[in-house]
Image: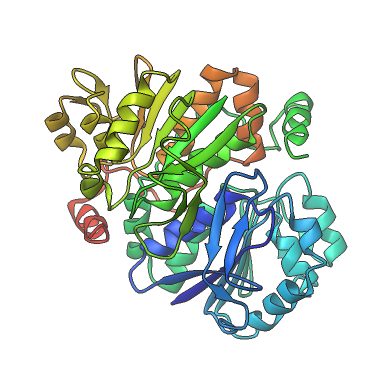
Length: 207
Length: 207
């Protein structure tokens, strides 16, 4: 199984590397970071630069794509090479997936019309502008499209993807490899239960 | 606050990028990937190459270090430049931290003698060989040293670190930024409750 993760300026690191790590540890998987041209791409916090090792043209027909989000997603909606690659790759994929605001890029590629999808909580409602039906769940499956909520949700998404592409025992083995028995130090990870003050403070960090 | 994350061949992606993302989103933090020399370093699955943007010499006195683990950790124990940098940086840090088998590198630097520490479940018992007292918890604090269990535990560690370096409201805001309200698809992430068969299948993926 060959997965491609497109990188664009100001992606969020964990959006890309969470699913990467899960899928890359699974037996029989190859995961490739792609961009318009091979080369370094820097994240939205400015400290993480990942090498794209293939161009979109090099990898037109991956089995799976995982589109990360990030503070640069809105600008990336105008990146025709990226959006066109997503649209064309989707014709060949077994699964087309996104993390966080990456779902807006699926939308820009025309893939979410009439589909249930999720995104980062800050922008979830606006996903309707892409023709999608926003769903406030952590992982949303509609046909062969799987969208995940913000940033860390990509890990949950990738593990559930493995159960579909491979089998549950494989997904469980990878979950144990990454010792994913989460124990968040605070009860602060869901916008559904966060106070208005907490939501405001979190939103302020996204500028 | 300036955090440094040393990269060495065959680190595990999520070990490094989980804490990176958490800390880099926090206000007032800068996070730098370092190596013996600036340049690309490739992970243990072969598909992720991160650019180290500073050398050890460039950054001798970070406030925080986060040492990732990976399939390359055992070889890295012989990397004198890395081990010496960890030992010397520790003299200046406010917090010295590790994820997964990164704790073995803290041990090689002589930092764990008589200290409580954790690591990836596969190698946890062997941490005693580094003079440490292995503790089967997800995040272990002993003095200014914080060690995290395998791979994904670095996210929990980094959030609890933020509560110490900054304050709880800041940690909560970052937790909401990364929408860390985890929902693992399977109850498979803990070696304490995994069947022998599951443990064997997970171990097989670590070779």
